[in-house]
Image (tube, rainbow, N blue to C red; front, side):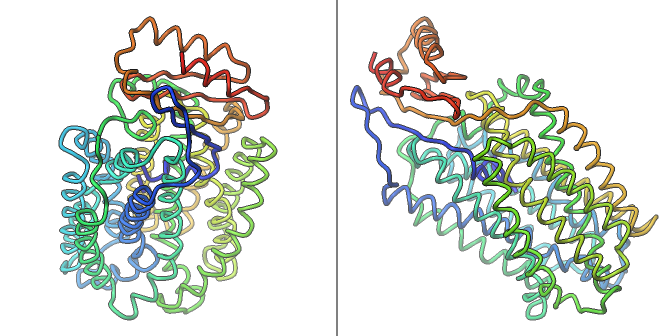
Length: 486
């Protein structure tokens, strides 16, 4: 997942935007056909890449254990998590390179690398070659480039809807993988899934070439791309660091779980791995049904921290339940249900909280760091899950995960409650590029004085003004428009 898997998952942050063209400000409630085509096409590519990563999760450990050399659980864990390491190394450089070399060329390159990695894994006869293939897959880290291209092809007032659409495909891809992986396994096997992913990725290159529009202008977007100059401030923000640790721990636990749970289900129930979708399907449905009220309550009642901390506590309990009942089928089912309720709430809440806490002019950078932490978590979870299950047994994996969750619970409990804010974005006339430092400072100060305005970012090089508004206060937007008319 990437800048950005989870930036795109920011489904619950209320963002209302207005476009100002010259001195005439107007907005459209609907995406244009070009914006809709670009959003849906990029969402399908993003989702396809994630699906290719996720499909093997529920079945790979079992498949790998049947390879001729009988690899250890450690090697299986490394194979599962290898893509996270290379993705962490390459996703920010890919995004930054796209500012120089163009969005589409970098997407072509990333998808081609991903397809090569998929075929290497498909043709592999041993675990070492599969690890190589998975590492190559992760090196095709186009998530940040896709996010930047979405920003190029959508107006400010529609960008959040576009990101939310892409974010939705990630959640759908993960859910489909838990059901589709076991089903595909009985028809084409794990090598076939890797090969299918490679061919679909090559088809995606054609979609980028012939279906997705070419952007009229490609430039840096503070809300969608990372900037090296802003990394220091983001890394010094202790509130953001808590969230970065959280996404690291969440995905480390996820990857560690899939090193163990497929084996545990077979041992406790005798079910073939191709039938495991019969467990995941009802568990996922139940978790989604129970997740939605929690998210609505958090946003509508401004109880984000309460729901967030409660979900971490639930995840901590789920890990303890796994450790205690991993040898018992119904204990595994109960633990999985609790796990996915907490996982879904946290996966949806984390990007929203990042958006509320991150400086308005550095949201893209904050999300880039966050997504790098997520990818590192995937790698560490695979390695430690494999090592611990091999040396100390299944339960030790979940004891390790419960320790990570307990630390996260402490960090989250002590964090500041995220402010109840919404973000408003305004696109200024191209003449904004010529604004002097004094005029930028003056406009920023005047906007900051308005009732309900918590934070202001005036970005003349992007022709954009970003405001964070207190959702609990009434505010007069006409005053903002008056100042922008200047």
